Amino acid sequence: ALRNLHDMRDTLKVPVALVPATISNNVPGTDFSLGSDTAINAVVSAIDTCKKSADSAKSRVFMIETQGRNCGFLAQMAAIAGGADIVYTQEEGVTLAQMQDDIAHIKELIRTEQRRHFVVVRNEHCSANYDLHFMETLFTEEGKGSFSVRSVKLGHLCQGDYPSPLD
Image (cartoon, rainbow, N blue to C red; front, side, top):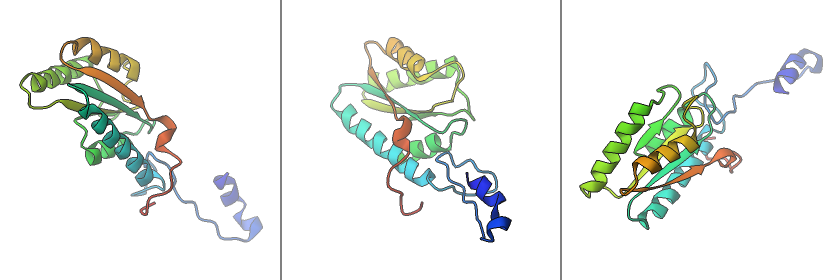
């Protein structure tokens, strides 16, 4: 729609500017796109809520799936800002061996009583083969006796909030 307006600028005799707006922050030639900071704040809020919920459990892993399509910016930045323990993005990819190593590390930290809960953030397209359901099932099966797993698929909760001051 904006592109059509831009194409009609000569006919309308009105200056037109296109402003990048995507929660993925993946517009070439720009530093930030409108909506990305608000989306990061929404995911960080979800991470904080999951951490509070995990405090009531003996040992728990929360898996949080963000939007972002083929760009891991939202997942990566929210994981850093929210203090997540593990993040899986399409840019880095994810392998079965990597997930098994992460599970072993989580189990060891729980066994030695260094930690009780963990947050895993994943971009919705971090893997063509390992979706949220598969990862939750893998972590649940391999973590039996050590920790429980809960998953949260944020979907459109990453969008539509009131804009942050930066946006």
